[in-house]
Length: 371
Ligand SMILES: C[S@@+](CC[C@H](N)C(=O)[O-])C[C@H]1O[C@@H](n2cnc3c(N)ncnc32)[C@H](O)[C@@H]1O
Image (cartoon, rainbow, N blue to C red; front, side):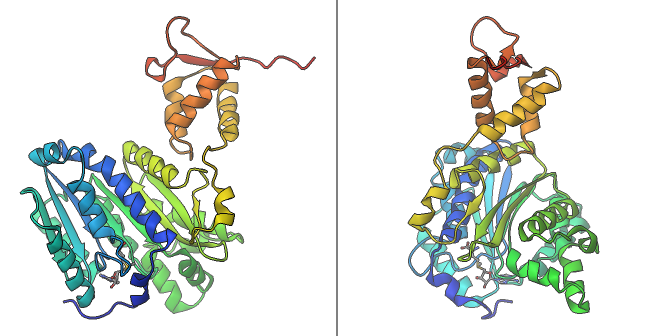
């Protein structure tokens, strides 16, 4: 049952770079995700566990409306909706926020027949637990779903995320409130805090696994443990910095699918083209220099040299190998083409264009000795 419980009503007064980036990532990702699944799956679900009011007080759209309008304005919309229904499920426990959200949805007007919206006034983890139980009891699968978990606090139950992730086409996008979570880890010796961390990390392993002295390395350790415990093949994340330049939130995408990993990497590069995946809280002109429009590909060239120094490799093998790295496939292709032009790489194709789809064997050519 919904009640008035918004712990941070000031959230809706501002529209920070953090909020904008979160929404841009959702919009860009769903733009690729809807057609990837909608053509064959029969149903796709967007589930917002902490849906909010639907609109900030300054007028910007909140995540439910960002997701909904992404589909409604999609260039493939009608063809997608001929083949699949799209279900938007919004959970919000604060009754004023829920009423505002419902008002915003009503203002969108008539929806295409295959678009369904449900709003749920409930505590989201309780609602998810019930959903999981009823799916299990009835032996049903969850349709392909993009689940956005956007709490104010850090106490997100790892078990529920793991159980959701067990369905074959579920992807999670979680706002990890890192500064507070890190503080909790530093107090892990206290019994109450240890129990909360067991709940978040779905077990006791955090004690041995999150140990670095370095704040950012600790964040990497925590993300890696979450990925492992939730059972995702890929974790792709962007650090959102607070005013003091330290990581405040981490937007974490979890998927078991290579195409999901590639798509989220593309989206993260789009919102943060320097590739470090650091985003500052406020748009500050003095920080513009940090974000260069062209990424520095020298480290990727060094990566290619390292790979090929162990022997020739097929182009597609390098594409598969670059997936765990931060670089996108187009970056890799550009580096390979450039190295070939400079004579650093030979390809076993002497006619026509050397392109990744023909999968040539690439060999490192020894650099000429300095004369
Ligand atoms: C950070 S805001 C959500 C912002 C929204 N996702 C967006 O991007 O527009 C968090 C929202 O979750 C609600 N909330 C907090 N805890 C909740 C819970 N356990 N279950 C459901 N809603 C919750 C709050 O009332 C608030 O509206």
